[in-house]
Image (cartoon, rainbow, N blue to C red; front, side, top):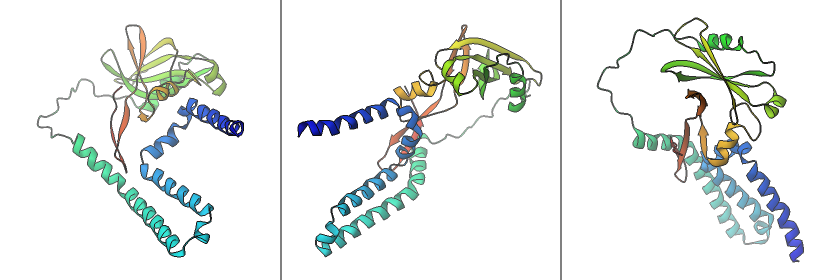
Amino acid sequence: MRKKELGLFLPVLIFIGILWFFRPWFHGIVMSFYRNPTIIYLFIILAAILIYSSKKRFVEGNTKRNASLGGTFALVILLLIIISVFTGALSNTALYKEYHPTQVSNELELSSSKIRILPKLTAYRYAVDTIEYARYTLGSSHLTIRDGTPVWGFFIIPDGAWNAIRLKDKGVLFVDMNTTQARMERIENELQVGPGMQIFDNLEWNLYKKHYLIDLDIPRALYYESKIYIVIPYISYSFRVFYTVPKWGEF
């Protein structure tokens, strides 16, 4: 009997281990439930109903008892559905109480010396025309700072699924956004971990391995002392039984 139980338990344990190792791939699904915990409770209630009904107690048991249990299940499901409708309002209310904005009393001092902003699509066209590598392309654009000047940043990433597995990110390309001219700077510095690479050197894979219940923003490149650093703002959540409250995360 013990060997039979071990034979059933071992595959389940292996399956759980595989899911745990590849958990970054399921991050989106897990977070959709974590941000809306009422959905989890609904599935638990539905599973309880299925387990209870599978034992045929509704047929073989007491009719009044079955009716009361069925009514209780229905009432709980209805309450969870109603609560799920108001979770957004509850989350926003808690967010305002904890991080409510303050009134700005002074006027903002804006410089008129640099008011020209290069459009993102124009910056991308300038940048992509400078790519000299057949197996590389540009990642998504992001705003960043280079020597105190705002610039458009583009990671130079492998082009295609096979190259993403075999190759590393080549570096980053900065496009000055204070002029309409094609003023760019390409920093070639092979990244060991970064966006656009697969599988184990992927940026999200490594971050979700260490910090799972968070939402990442766009990765931004900073070039400092001849090295490329990747900065990623992210949001964590405070769990409140029926809803969650977003907050700035801290590692």
